[in-house]
Length: 204
Image 1 (spheres, rainbow, N blue to C red):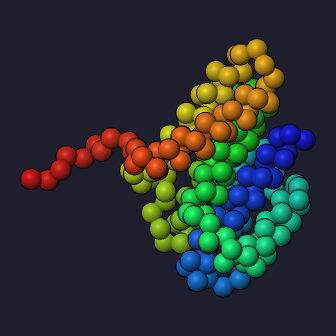
Image 2 (cartoon, rainbow, N blue to C red):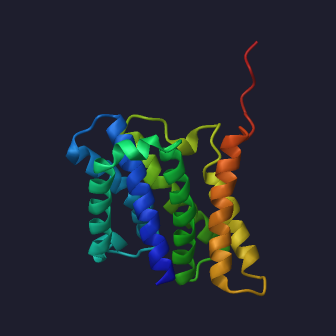
């Protein structure tokens, strides 16, 4: 139940971020729903296909489509209130990658994959819904922008999880701790303009 709740919360967070992007692009209602849907399910769909878990999760559990639909309606109705919040899209996107990274890791562990592969699955789950969203909206995906600490935060959180589970406390605390590390890492990187090194030499 704990992991299911985390998955649903991640679905809601990413669906909201998808709605906000789609509405910024002035898409119609169908377009808004599609962008919200692929943002919320794209990473998990790719993850399930990679590990041979088909039909993919959202096809087996109608609760995900229902959750996304309700979230879309809610977000459209309260879009003005959502936009009053400071950097709302960034916030929901960051919450989404934190939650979905751990959902992907847990999925990898459930099929007995190595920790490094689980971290990769977690990163895919967290990032690729946003990649599809940005591509459909004619934007450079956030994961590929040099100034964004995005996938790096997911990897760091995944590594921290496998360290935390070695400590003598309940595994749920390690799970939540890793989520907080991902969210905090990304928010701090944005606040203090921390970015990965530039591999390109400046032109003279």
